[in-house]
Length: 391
Image (cartoon, rainbow, N blue to C red; front, side, top):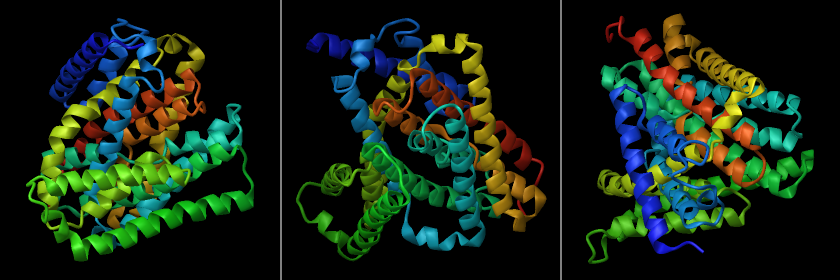
């Protein structure tokens, strides 16, 4: 039984730790999410113990709050993704996005299978290697004032394609995990199911919203676009679970649909307080679930080194190959810009732990890998971009 006073104290500790961690990380020119996860490591059971293991279990109030936070986070990511933008990114961005998914997924699955997991679980692990964190790269590009460069447009366009492909893969491997087996017919069915759900909800939903989006303004409540959009988010998150997909896929699609309304910018602004309140709980609890004792083992450190090497090299290679038309330097910039995993890799690791796919050791390794790619990318990208003037 969780007493209200204990829950409130835990909420206070987590929220304050998240703010302190994010502030310190940003002062060190690192993404705030890095600080939030490290703050979770510090206050978790394997360090200070301010949050105990019982409070982190599935179905607890903190776990449910974190789940809500990640659903709204993926809704916000979808809100920044428009179908029209995908049509404008061009051949280079499409190649970068596709190669940047296929190479990490293939090599990640091969590595996980070689580590002793069956192919279904290996594919789940590989999904954590796939999605680029567009937010981390976009922040660096914005700070350097190079968002108008062709490399920047290719990176951000490819990251959008990357996210959508990652959502499809996640949906596919989640369904396969629930079915408990893999065969070509089953794989084709799951892929068709994921594609069908995304296509129907995403394509039809965006077209309907584009033509009829003004109905969100009809209620008297001035916040009606936000409240209705959140209702769509929660509804599609639930619906996606009915298709055997992750709830975050439905939330992402809801964001894509809502991005078509005339008051999209206002809706993004209204989402910020919700994200500021709820998203930190997910990232802090993600860090708190990491057993730091794992990294006293040489085997775990070796596993982390290999996972990070795979994550960096495959993303860089996929991005650079897809952007060869931009020249060697341009291809290198795009390749580095696609490396950070950030929040998406962490989300998939969390889902894998909850589903029993990831051991505590593997979970710690995947989260640490996501953090390392997010830490390494900004300074390298800045180094590649600063010497060159905008053409």
